[in-house]
Length: 389
Ligand SMILES: Cc1cc2nc3c(=O)[nH]c(=O)nc-3n(C[C@H](O)[C@H](O)[C@H](O)COP(=O)(O)OP(=O)(O)OC[C@H]3O[C@@H](n4cnc5c(N)ncnc54)[C@H](O)[C@@H]3O)c2cc1C
Picture 1 (cartoon, rainbow, N blue to C red):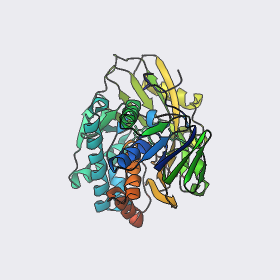
Picture 2: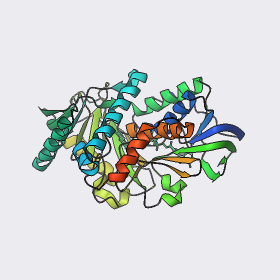
Picture 3: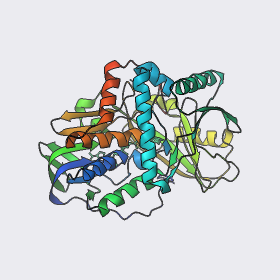
Picture 4: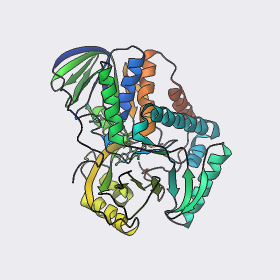
């Protein structure tokens, strides 16, 4: 019952780091962000090793809802209000392009049939209209939707992927290219030019720490700038009694679900029902949230199929909802803090940290810098609680 519905158990564990290795760059964290960093470094001909405290996709990257959505955690109209139209539009364009890029590279794990943002009540319908109007005003695809699942907006260029399959595919490809990846290798100490794990040391010129949840456990100086929260989900056996052709997020994104091609449902949400308790670095599911998820599954989604999986993972929230991406210490880049929506922006963050280290153009970093220089706080997005800090 515990563990994500995405695990098909087709994974050969990778070795633990033992002894000493040498590389130009050490990437810490083998989720979607760290693997994207490794891809980029390899493309630039830079030698790199990757390591993870547990395993490839053992964090949120392999345990999430699988939504691939353009934009940041906040909805587009909220991002426009926060950052202005030009920056919001440029960010949206970059994330939509990243979706296309990843889907083209891994068509077998993506299904880009659109996403539905559905309203939970009349007030949210009004917000959906504002959301759609902002998208259309800037030339982005979106249309009003009324159907058996509810009413709201349809975003035709979004979609889903199989999260664990994505990171495992990336890791297999990197290994086939000769990139060394280590599992069960936790960073315990960061010294200038050295990443020390329980079993060995990586000597390197630079480090990228690509960790979303629990980032402040590695870098205490980030306390107050990023905060770890737990998000929970459940999964069911195939549910032929319902049909959800597109992934749906509901109630301002607090609840989200998708139906896999085999009919199984993956459903997450209700974090705001236990806001204080879910600000935690623990990543075990709780009865409190799981009971709410199951009630919603039965009463709102009308699914009868048995629950087969329950899981949770850690993510990092930032006060302004903007991802964290910076050279925190000399030659040490950090990428994280995706505020509940990191499948796409995480990969952009990891790749961008690598570009910066290679001295290559890094348009995503420039966009985030522009966003930070003019930002004001407002709104919330997928799983983003109000008044988070
Ligand atoms: C339940 C849930 C549902 C979600 N749904 C969605 C969604 O539908 N769409 C979306 O876009 N986003 C979603 N998210 C958010 C998204 O999953 C994350 O933002 C994203 O996966 C982060 O990827 P990452 O590679 O940056 O970090 P992670 O996947 O967290 O990877 C970090 C890795 O670093 C490792 N690590 C941590 N500390 C150390 C250390 N000291 N030494 C070595 N390794 C270490 C961890 O073991 C982990 O494997 C969801 C998250 C959760 C938890």
